[in-house]
Length: 231
Image (cartoon, rainbow, N blue to C red; front, side, top):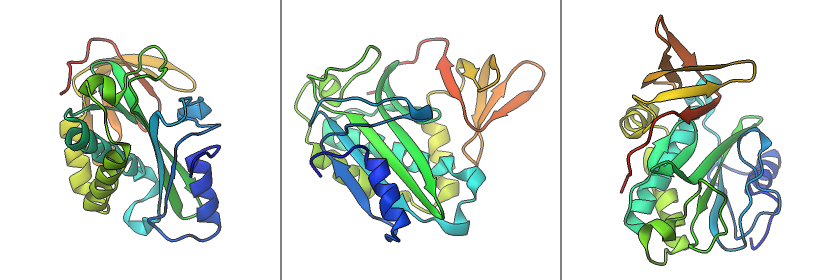
């Protein structure tokens, strides 16, 4: 599609209509793209890879483990950048791809009945314009990047990992740049700081707050010390 309000909304509509697992919505421009907590995701036409994948994982992926579907897409997108653009972004819990401390992409999962829609917005064009704290694939690569090649890499990576949840958790843990970081975690009712000790097999963040480990299933995580460059 050339233009939609949101690829996730289109995929959720397909889910309600009974579309089969594996349906993919791709657009060149979103008029109402959004990230976590309904935050707007704005990008100029043709500047990003915007895609949403419809999944129906069934009992193999309990609701408490749905973050692993986000991990599948994030890992696939990182590998796609490596093959199509020559650099390997790091993964920042819960749903970002980053280069250093700059955001390259975000992943958003939404539920519709037994369906799970996972959307990806990945900055591609060197021109942008991108907000402060963001970076694009072409800026990092220093050359043009083929959006179709990125999409092919993402879909191949998702296909290779889908349903292998234990292996996904292990791979995500190895590649998550949030591990070992001092972080601030912002929840709906409170904020706290600590050191990230691990990512659980369910994809949840385990944060050492001094006297115990706190399990974070959802929240905003801010790195409080620099993230190394990932290429």
